[in-house]
Length: 357
Ligand SMILES: *Cc1c(COP(=O)(O)O)cnc(C)c1O
Image (cartoon, rainbow, N blue to C red; front, top):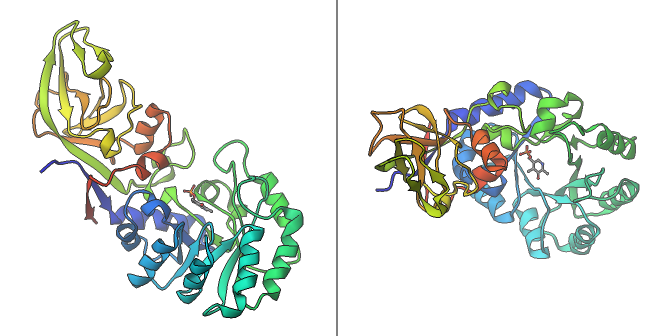
């Protein structure tokens, strides 16, 4: 069988969750498991994250799958519901919803009398990111409508930061949020991964970590290891062929690498159809037999190439780490001009998943 696999380390997930708790000891943790737990597999990752106080998901189906699997924690639909039917189902299964727009609020009011149960709501403010949420000046009015709505159970307040991971910081958005919510005493949720690590003043009642649970960095240029995070995904495969190129010979599609000296290369069973980024250039880090080396040539659909000139014992059957413990996913992402988030979410369905720890 083709060896391309993603091994999910439940111990690393537990470790990273503990690290979040050490950073935000007074906050409840809503583990964000949208996008199939950032590519790790929703129900697989949930095992490692079962001590979380709640889970944040995007789609109702993900919340219902967690309920069905026996998770009784708080579940939150991060964009709320997309239809009145979904609203009924969310209420029925005690799934909390974000309300971020007038249309959602109106739907809730229209449906309140016939909901199977009242639904818990996180009211979202647009404190400056200008993606989702009520403007600060419209927020109190939306809150009053929720308070008056018989279909609403608990109310909590939230916003989301645009630049918690860079020099932009959160001060401006935090100031806007605090001013517009002054005098209210509802529980508050503000912090994503970057804000958890960088801005304790934003921890409040619920933190919402995503990427750090999976052991990748939320802050470009700062390694996950320097935060004490452990990679939850080990993406590995094997060498399926070896070639020796003489000076002047080319390699792969587009002849994007030409040998300048005798070069031994390993043909590796992983390509962009497995989720490896096609934009990874010559020189992207990769490990063969536990030794760091680099990719050469263009990534193809089912294969890529690693330089093993300096690894004489490497050959067919050698284990290759695409990312994991030796090669941080963030290092591959940086080489390919993206972020670890995108690479983790893009691991393809044909990759075989295993669980360890
Ligand atoms: C995805 C998401 C998060 C988690 O973000 P990370 O940067 O992965 O920690 C938190 N809150 C909301 C609303 C999200 O959509």
